[in-house]
Image (cartoon, rainbow, N blue to C red; front, top):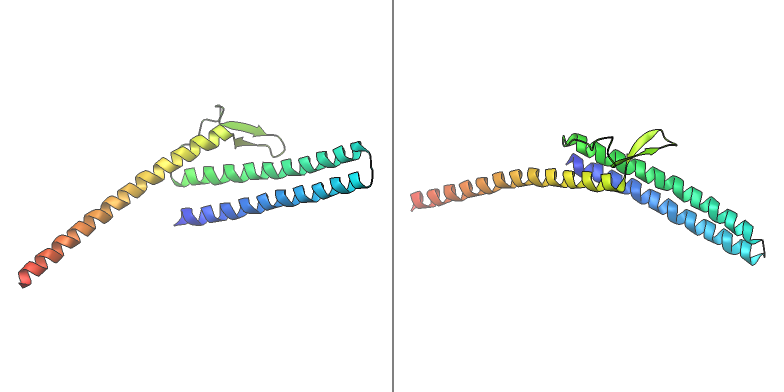
Length: 147
C-alpha cells in the first residue's frame, strides 16, 4: 500500500516538472517569435534560446534528483542493494554535490525492484490460492455432511 502512495507522489511531482518544462518552452518560443518579429538581431534569439535551454536543464536536474530519490527509497524499503557507487550506474551532480543514477543505473535498479515486487506478489497469490482451495474443500465437506 505504501508503495502505491509513494508512486502517486512521485508521478505527481514528475508531472509538475514536465508541465514546468512545457511552460518554459512555450514562454521562450513566444519570446523568440516576438524578437524575430520585431527585427532584433539573431544573437538576441540565440541568447533567448540559451536562457530557455538553461532553465530546462535545471528542471531536468530536478527530475534526475527526484527519480534517484524515489528509486533508492523504494529499493531501501524492499531491502534491495543499490548499485555499486564505483560503477557506471552513478554520475556526479556538481551543482547539488550528490551522486545520481545514470540512465543505465535507473534501468538496472528498476529491473531489480520489479523482480522483487513480482516475487512478493507471487508469494501472496500462492497463499490466496491455497486459502481459496481450502475454503472450497470445506464447503464441499459441509454440503456432503448435510445431505
